[in-house]
Length: 338
Ligand SMILES: Nc1ncnc2c1ncn2[C@@H]1O[C@H](COP(=O)(O)OP(=O)(O)OP(=O)(O)O)[C@@H](O)[C@H]1O
Image: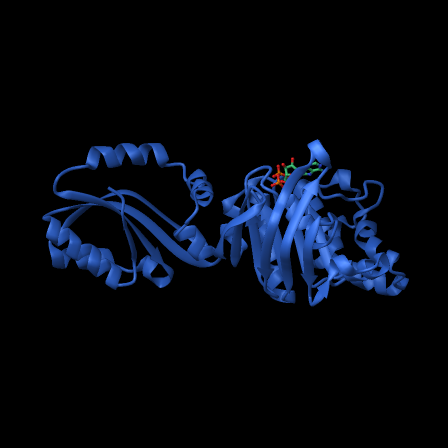
């Protein structure tokens, strides 16, 4: 659906030149929710703005739905852009227009009839839950409501792709979750391809199918969210996951206190239906190893449950080794951490 090939973006010239992206390749499938995560300055905004050529890459090709955008004339590009909606961190609404008129704006630009516009805008108001607010101005809306207007406006031209530029970064956690739920709903209902950029792992974990981690203008890791989240390979990815966890300090103290000759601390990851299973208690009953729980979480990646537990096994080294082997054989991820 979207293919970025060898994208390089250099801002400025000569001694003022700044390379934001260098030789970046990325492929996004139709219908998926694809997240790009990176720290400030990593190149996220530049990357997402290259997909609809709001930023024109210095080098490389941008393919969307079989069309190479950098080769198009201005007129052809306008036509293709209609298939690519976009929402923004600060909403970018017209402050002097009502909710209704903001949503109608792209339809008026393309010369749709008044009746068609009315039908479409009413449908979109219902979709984003803003029917009662149709005659209000942006200044009379909450951040979440403004983003709903942004989403409705982006969907007005029936795009195939929705680009989300830090769409929830200005919102509180509860509103963020409501907007993410709406995006997931839209993705499922219209089979819309969604590309989002964020600096929050929580956003990726909540709705994305796949994720790419961007650092220094290049992709350092990518894959299914489950794989990247549960088995991060790159230090930047580990950083993001650690920053979501509040327990780093106390956990370190517990691990240090727990270290001993006949003990071993391990991280066990349960995924899917195994999250609620009793594999751990069954295995230790067999091997005679005892355990103490140092830390445990249960959560979801998109809608799939997973659990992570850090436990200290105590017993003969051989029995601990058998315990770990047996848990692994039962499909759990076991990582020895000390
Ligand atoms: N218009 C510009 N002119 C010059 N340099 C720019 C411009 N836009 C971005 N850059 C530089 O390009 C690099 C990537 O910026 P970009 O905004 O894409 O990163 P980002 O990951 O989106 O960061 P943030 O999360 O802070 O928005 C940064 O070093 C930035 O300073």
